[in-house]
Image 1 (tube, rainbow, N blue to C red):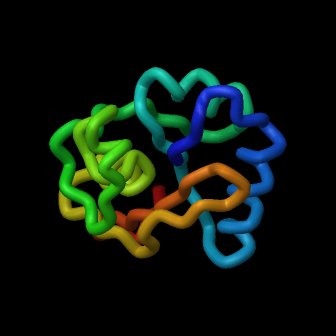
Image 2 (cartoon, rainbow, N blue to C red):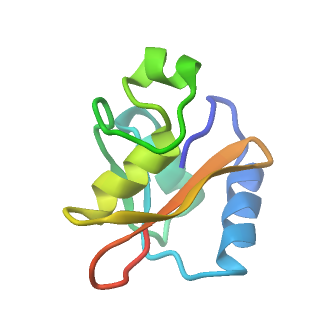
Length: 111
């Protein structure tokens, strides 16, 4: 997940609820500086703070690349959290100011 500082828990919850109406999400991932906020919003979930710099993504935001060294925080975080061999099953989508992408491992688990 990618989100700006100041994003409310309600926005995070609503975005995830919309995604989960279509598929199961096993874990959440974002950059390390946002992981605590994500964990606070989802205390019962596994949350990973992952390094995303240098991770190639199918979509590209010049602003995000300048800030984080990747085209999409959401896509890169999903791929890193899902592990080696992961593939995106949903490129980034913005829901209420929250950017979400889904990746799947070889075992079919989503992050």
